[in-house]
Length: 623
Image (cartoon, rainbow, N blue to C red; front, side, top):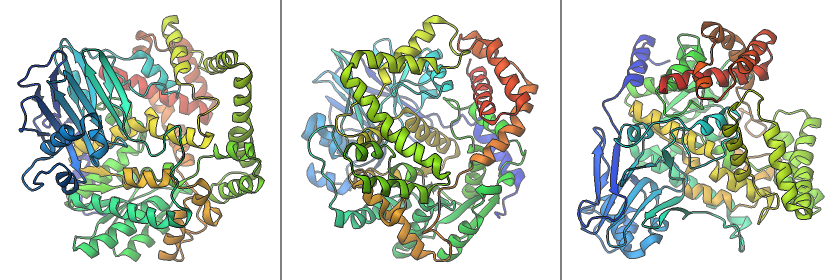
């Protein structure tokens, strides 16, 4: 347990929520045409400012983040790495490669380039979206920032609610990857370059491990393990360069593998060992044995905090609402109050960066949509390998698992593909109709809004006959899904408020590139998921049962929290007036649904009720 008192932690956490003295930068550029001088102006930004190029009058560059390949890039553009700033190196890369310059940049970054000679502005976000980047049009200007809140404060940017985005959120749809919850503010997508010129605004993907057509450049089967370990080691060591480090250590393979490599790299390079930071969850989410065993084996200073010591009020949902009110979007990670407390304790001990296992589930696992490809190929042996691997890796009843893998992710997608081949327009219309029919009856009483939701559903439908395979359709969706972008943006924003960097080695582009191009069944070597780290960690920490470990989560614990706290929140303020005033919900029907959930104590309905209470509180704070 940290020596930092709970009172001190609570005081610092409150200060974080009220913090307003580190305003993020905003880059302001002429819309068209661009002037030869001062094409970009930095406004706001009383905290850390981005790097600004100084070498050219016709091209200006704003760079925020960290370049991983400074030396290599300097050699390629014939510039001295020790004297050139990051923005000047990017400028030289742009002068050499033109619009292809992002393909030569490695790192975590947000970049804005204004090219007066070609009358265009380009905005680039790093391949996986570790750095956020948003933009808005205001009069004859384009405004860019890593912060939605900073853009909202600019003249000409109206902070009107994006009703469709919030309605989408309440329906768990998230259909538009560009939109935010503010109508006039949009995001630059991860791995994309936005280009604005005299003919309009376009967005193009510049980074993808596997294109939708052409041969797949698979990693050689015999090389996939060594290739992964090399890239993963580099990703973890890069994260250690940010200063004294902590690690959110759960009992799962993702964070354990990061802790092991970070401890090894720290010893080899003479850095101080990272601090292990763990939350103690109750019930079937308890991982204390693994957490303490790993920290002890690695010789790490271990700060273990019981969950309700990290949430002193014992009211997780109330604390989440308090944080959410200061966020540019409703909070996705309801556990954030506890992890904020843990991060504040770590910061008091000098930690400047915290590593997490975020991304491990997405990239170490195997998409269940592989079942559709295997059934279509009539590969019975591989189907059995997939089903067996999932049975050994997840706590799910066998009959339920067979239904999920073979029907939901196997036969049903193939059936949909067959119907689309026979009657493409009719089947697409049927898919849209079925999705619209599933919308809650109390959502979008305004017919214009409901019609817009239907249009968004249609635009977001994944192809029933994917161009390459069902497996790659789902993996690509992982790259593109708005929810993942929002999650990384939320973590980044919390790090900004805490003045601590949160880093995720499994979201490193090099690591994702290797895992994306590893044949999926190789990720099931040994009959369980996450094979590229499972066997190594099991040998490293014998006795913890990592070779047999199944995926655990806090689902049951969270259900108990919801069952205890939602009725209290609803009784304290049982109204949905803000959502009703915006035409997002029909208040009587929605309130009746919450009342029924509270009286029946139905867990699924209570989770829906929590979504409504949460959205209502967030909207009131931002109205």
